[in-house]
Image (cartoon, rainbow, N blue to C red; front, side, top):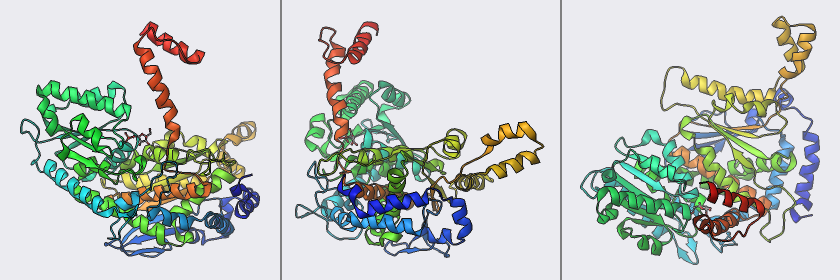
Length: 566
Ligand code: F6P
């Protein structure tokens, strides 16, 4: 048994779980009218984002708020106490400080994980190897401001003097999902004169379909890659370069139409990108944590640098909350520990995320990388195989679409799927009753998942519809909802850049909390390497029909079929 599963707090939670399992949340709500007040939090943020107040959700507020309702969970006060004991036992507070302090907590790569420094608005220095990184962070932010302003106001023009109308970000994973998700989320703040496109897939279709309607003379490419060696990105970048030169008929055009974001300045210069349009970041920024760095350049271009800085401000607000709030009032800690509760004690294998805000439609996809690449680990920090489950499968779609597709399985299927619901109080596109209908659905779903419908209630309904006897008995079991399905609800005023920054940082820290409990490194991703290595071996075999088969029978068969039939 591992140290974790042997620990007193883990054992206590295991025992406690057997007492919670039979309890119905519906009954818990009936027994305790204060349940919402007890199990919800509100973060109130004053305009300078320094005054962060944590208070019960019901209290009136005039400032920006983020409400976290976790009362519809299979918990009582004892559960929260035990979960926080587990968090304490694993040294969460110390680990949080180690991260913020720039210690090399990414031990397998000997790197710090300092995405928090990128949004540090405090003026406090942040040291890596004894050197304050903040002057460099501010310098690059300044360069991003100059460049994004120049493109947006038409000072930076294309090779033929035309204003840039389209930016195409070429990147993958963290160099794509973050900026793409944020640009979609903040679309309502975007410039009318600039469109943002994202090409990630090495499938030529992605690039070709994106470029189909673009005018090379008004298109700016941003090659985003931390390493600047990623096969998919470099392949797309080379093809984009060829397209541009082909259309413009002049290789010199590359200078005005290509920018790069990377930690590998040698490779960007080798690729021929004008050094004035190369934006640097550092190895202490993990790929999936990088949207706050120059990887956010498409965001700055699309919505403007002021908005980008507001996004950073939102991240900083959540950082301060995470660092300073006591564990029982700490959103990322509570959220992370609830995930552990279901994943490790109830055997839940997935966690759904349902944004009731169309602008957040790429948020679940973004969270998939954040959570699954970070916490999809099977050995602990000391290299021991873990004897407990780690990261959950994350998935989701915007409500109400999901309601008409897969919610059925959550309501009446056999698996326990804890779900997060996110919704704004105000729509950015008020249209008749749309927003009230949207939120009515959001609240109704969490209620339905929690209360379910008993056999007696279903029977009464069927009888009221005039059904009796055999027909009623046959239909009855299908009409029963077991309920007791856990959900969290996050409510915010509207999806502005600051709020979005808070939400992203909230999930980042939730992931970190879980990694601390599981004693795993959330900042490396060795699991993606094997596929890359094998693709490197297979590619020459696809090109050259004479190369020998060196794989298993299935892989050989597929390679041969491709070679013989394409
Ligand atoms: O292969 C996984 C990964 O390394 C991710 O962690 C990263 O976000 C992505 O590839 C892209 O890497 P890069 O920014 O270096 O091109």
